[in-house]
Image (cartoon, rainbow, N blue to C red; front, side, top):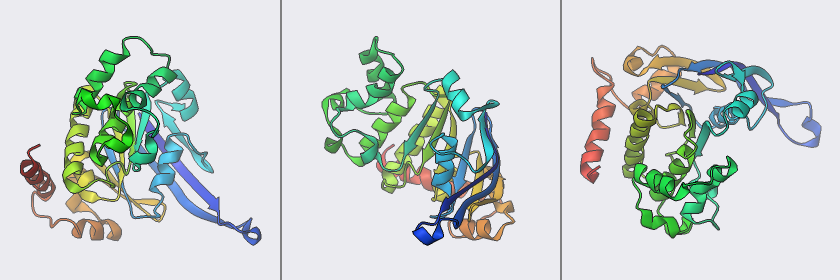
Length: 270
């Protein structure tokens, strides 16, 4: 569904005397995401993760290379399929207009798509789908917890019935218990709505719990790509160090992450 081909992106370093000096952020990035798949992209701060998400969403232009959805460039695809690509970002506070009620926040993209009939029932359905009470619809963002507000952002993101979602550090501002609840929700939404995810994070445990394929981004390059069940086969030193810092691999190493998340779910009753 999504194809990223030989992508390069650089920025001016800044300052009057450095107008010709550029910092390479992404260098030759290539990967694909199949329909219905969840691909995780992991990398440390400054590795280029957020830059890549902005390029994929069409918010910035590439220096070189292409981003395509089902064979079309991003702009063409989004015109053909309005609302079919959505995003959830790290900072849920700035993602929601503080002057809007929760109902208005969820309704906003639907109005943009000229969908104005029977919205109340649909919004109630969305609230139920993300595990929120309908009583919250009259409240404002500052009256909700971080986990509740991120669920509102998810409800808004799926309101247009997207086919692909980009989640850019969508869980990193939440505590571990809320993270597990949102991960469970994302997995259920993926199954029920047949969604395709690009899940960007710096936390390996959240990525391995949700994603089918994991890409390791280091200094602007993808240095390793592995299926979830093959993480113990990592060859790149950066990927191996990252993996070793989180889990110890045995014959069924990936199950360790699953059982850690399962244990947390049981502790909080989710």
